[in-house]
Length: 137
Image (cartoon, rainbow, N blue to C red; front, top):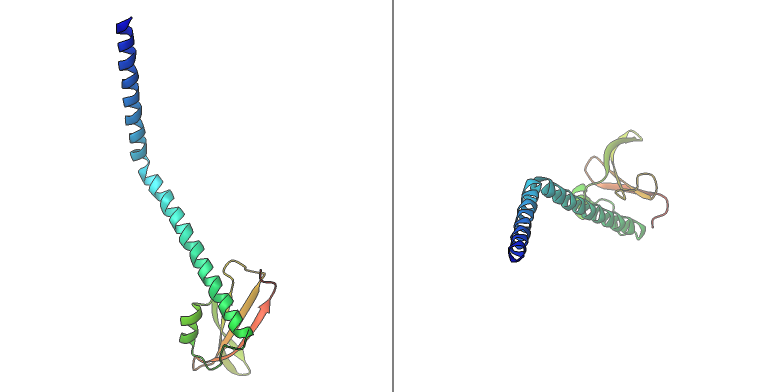
């Protein structure tokens, strides 16, 4: 009976050792996939932070326009430095002049929410702006 208990004890310890070794192999075996998932989670966090920052800059731009603090004659590079890259840049024709239009909006609100349009002349100076759009919550 004593030998039987010793045999069961050795068998139990052997089973635990094999189980631990297999668990370690599984972790190493799938380490690449686990690291990919971690990278994806980190990337998602970075994207969310980027969107939040861009949305905050949009709100700041809109507030400056609404309080008449955004001066005309400002250069493009000054606008870029303060508010970041616009969503869209394109040339528009206005009374025989070519102007550049910049669009700012919330990053993930494609159809609803406010939009700010900035218009620049051929000397890269801000000429005018327009706010369009819906409710911002």
